[in-house]
Image 1: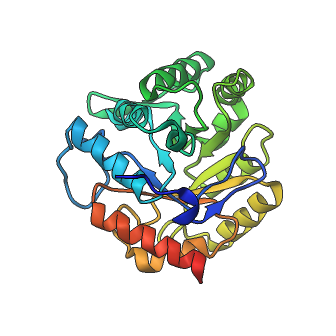
Image 2 (image 1 turned 120 degrees about the vertical axis):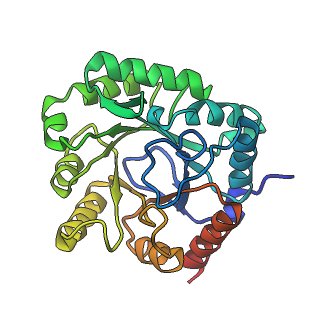
Length: 274
C-alpha cells in the first residue's frame, strides 16, 4: 500500500519550542508492548511482533505521524524500531518519535531513577531499540514527585546534555499534578508538556485553563495523554473538545483497534475542516 502524504490527511500543529510541526493526532504504543499492569477497563492479548509492525504501518498509512512510546512499555520500543526501519526513507523522515525516561517496568512493578547516569543510559538504550540516531522528544516520566524532580534538576541536565549532543531534539515533562505542570512550563530546558485533559482528569479546571494559556505564551508544546480516559470516553465528544484549545499541539490516543483509529483520524480531520 502506498503510504499517504501527511499533508493530505491530518492537520499539523506546532509550538515555538518544538523543532518541527506534528500531526494533531498521535498514537500511543503501550498496547503493542505490554499488557501487564495496564490501567484499561478490559484486558487484552499482546499482539505478536509481526502483528505489531503491521499495525504501526497501518496507523502511519492513516496519516498519523506522531508515535509515542517508553521503555516501561515492554516490547514497544523494539517493535517500533523494526517497523520504522521498514519504512521508505521519505516517510520515515516525517515520523515524530517520542519516548520517555525515568521509569522502568520489571517483575510486575514500576521503578523510577532520575539520576544523571540512569537517564543517560535509558536514552542510549532507547536509541538502540528504536534504531534511530536521534529521538524527536524525550519525556521525563514523573513518579508524582514533580516539584522534587524539577528542583533536583539531574534528569533535565542529562537530557539537556543529550540534546546538545544531537541525540535528542526536544525535552518534555509528563507531570502528575497541575502544580508540577505549571512549574515545568517555566523551566528553561522544557520544550513540551504531556498532560491529561478531559472532563474527568482534574478538578482544577481554572488551573488547566491558566496552564494552557501560559504554555501558549511561552511557546511550550502541549501533548495530551489519555484523552479518552483509557477508553472510557466517547472520542466524538472528547477529541473535538480537546482540540478546540489552540494551545494543544497533539492528542495522543493509544489502542490496537484499526476501526477505532480510523474513527479517531476522521474526527480529528473533521475538527480541522470545521
